[in-house]
Length: 238
Ligand SMILES: [Zn+2]
Image (cartoon, rainbow, N blue to C red; front, side, top):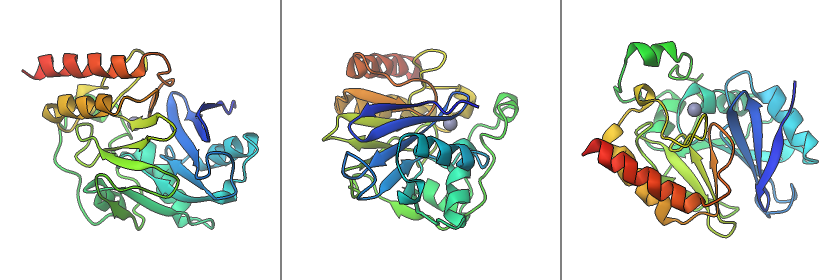
């Protein structure tokens, strides 16, 4: 089993923890694990052992992970997160509302599009095992310099995490880069009308690098490519 990892910005690493599925480790001090590590997304329920191995391969201590932030409630992002939160290391868990409440098990996901395709894409829309989750607000700034940016569309409470000092945007499933740069399967997008404004908002941050939930990072002309994606999405909705 390969444990592919790569740095995308100072103290920010992409961990490919399942085929085409990413989690990110963020060092609060932008260097190592001295001030603790934040995980952004944690794959499915099956991901934690591989996640721990990947963090070790980076020369970091997995026990330094004391906080997990989920970009949204889908099981391929929050499943591993709630498993970690309920396990012995018990990092804190946080997400944007209303996805935080879905992960906590205190609210139902907004009735989205329930198509055959959505069901066929399997597991993704299944709810993770519930675990206590702190509800973050849009614009909240976490220790380590992560800023919560509301990015609804894929889910109602989808968030991107922005590291302004490091120029890195962890976009969750607002942007897919596999098999090309797009906004992901429409069948899995809860609110298509919200997508253009979300993309415009993310492009306006002018990130130097974008780390998506699925696929390789966007390193070259990341802002221009987000702008183009926003324009395309706006034309489609109109
Ligand atoms: Zn996903």
